[in-house]
Length: 535
Image 1 (tube, rainbow, N blue to C red):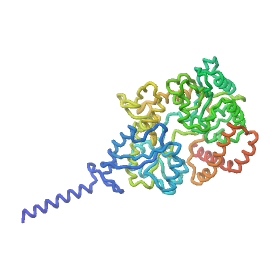
Image 2: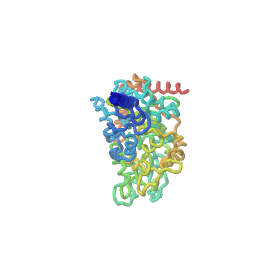
Image 3: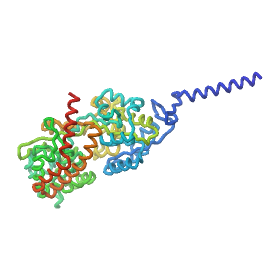
Image 4: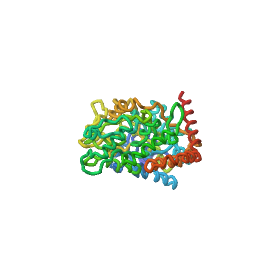
């Protein structure tokens, strides 16, 4: 009897110990969260003890492979034990595919590098198709919470008018966004033809004619492209060439002058600029494919042998023509126009973005998704996600700071970055440069170029990043799509085919009927409210 009782007692003791172990959620065993994720770790790594798969949708750069082929993504998987099944969509098809997913409610777990507009954030947040994140951030995102403590304005920027955070930020405090368009010109050809670097629009036209007519690449063919650019693209566009006539343009056709929001595409200076540059198109000085080419086609024009590009507009010189020909080109300062104007517009682009990552209602594992993405907000990981991993782009110095490795001969940083860095929801603050990561050489050079070439002529104001109310966004969306399509179509048509003089008055009347005045009132009200909130 005593022996049997002892066995029963031992059995009960063991059962109690097992039960306690299962209920304790101890650090060694992990825990089960409310969605039933076995061995989910609320802190520390890995995020889960047993590998789990999430489905993400993300646009990708033209030269990027599937993200799971990228070393830094493989490192993230090893750290977290979370495997991402990527649906990488080429950039030009991303918007349409994204819209179809929401319309059919066939959603991934998350959109990475999501590029959501304010309207999409508010609309899909209201519909419940993307979920509020503020509680998840506070519980499971210590890296992001630390950033919010350092930059309260970043948290404010991602907070929607209804008080929720539906999307995560991206920020690079480098000072590069003000001037997205650098105009490069072939100095080797100028020297060969004994021409000076032009300082006025008329001189520039004369140089382009010389490039067209005098066979500077000595090919014996009619293969020279005097000037090429990317129509209506975020960089490489023609907007700053309008500045020589007194009104710098941009892809939004929206600037600020003395606190007033101005729609550039109805200004008389805009009309004058289009009439002038149509003459260049007629003369064959501007590449007519500028209005239809994609990035791959544009880049290819810069890498022909012998070189065929006389001048072009892009984020930087080297990315178009490659390192082997970059030294043949110099940057053009802002050119003086026929009425003495010499300026460069300040871009509306911000170093802060609020639509970098969203979690959808289809996600059954939001806690571990937040834990996964928070790893990216560690500044050293953010740098590698933005520019590339240790061993390829960086090496660590004795203090653990990321130092740029020397590139192999013939390798362009811009192209290599596309291949090894997925970009996305990253934050690198100003104080991280020089402590956590060394700014890449081309960024340092770009900052110096802005300071030396463009800053003396840079206008003071731009339109800030304002989070409009849902009602305002509804009105903006209702008005702006048709207005912008109409304006951009007319700009391309007038530059290519002429006709602005005959059509201008009807064009202005059409824009008024389409609601341009109402649209500009919304933007002006938003700007006035924004300024009053920061004063």
